[in-house]
Length: 429
Image (cartoon, rainbow, N blue to C red):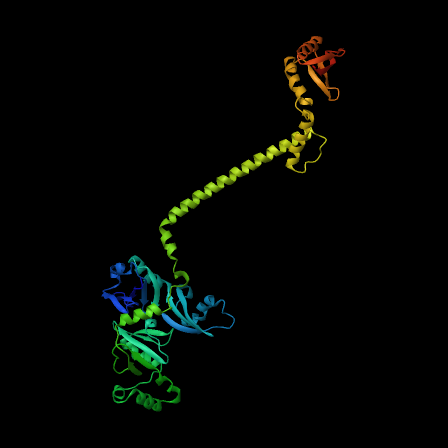
């Protein structure tokens, strides 16, 4: 929607609030009116619901000034500006919002307003349900002319715009004093009525000194009836509704005070604001889950390291001939090679099948202990050296083994309380 709502606040707390809805496409006023004071701003919520809202603030409540920019401070101008203005400000610069309106070579045009006043303006609109897109000094919404001022009266105050970034908002009784301070020449009403614009300009220029000759060139183009007895050459422009004039200027103006801490947030940021608490809770939950995951991974890594250390220990104990372990896969490969060697290349060959058949017999004679095993694959025999408490233990083992093997029992010898001997096992044909 191209329509927008323009609201002008009064410099007086209980002063009226003017508003207008303007359509740039149709170039006409959609709606307009006047509120008794700021407390009734909520009545404009419907007009501002689906339209941009431009807030015009009184030029009398802020300072429009210019400063010289020191050489070499271009990159840090935003930080330097407050201290360049410090001497002409009565307040602490930390309490002021300073916005640069325009930069011309070594000159900077700035608007200065108190943070408290800025916050009060924005709070009034926020409480009324109005989302402000621009905050503009009202005087800077008048048309800008070269070598001419523009002026309009509203609510007993005169708005004057001197240039792109300079202007004032003054009560009627102070207007003459301000014009004289600007060295605007005094031109009588009779002169304006009797003489044409060209003759007035020439006659007044001749009556002035060289120092003031340039001042007469500055006309005051007024869009509302000119006040009587004022200094300056007042030139009437086509009469126009003041709020419509200001609304069009606000639409084209780039002099918004919404910068720094008041910079507009993206639309999505406002949409997410109600979900802030949910987001915080989700972030906390995610943090707890990540912490739990990290602890679990660390525990698994420690357990894996323990398993690896144990596998290395077993490897060195079983295969002491391998001194170093260059990598983990080396252990597995050596174990597999050794098992292949012991198990035989073909099914039923190697040492392991012998041990499988030998184990049940040995488990039935626990009194007998095998001290040595020697396997001869070429002769296909297994020789074992053992000790037992009695001779019959060897006999018991022999009886059990003959079921699976051909058994040759060697000589048995008693040494003290033990009997030692050897058994040779061969596969049955």
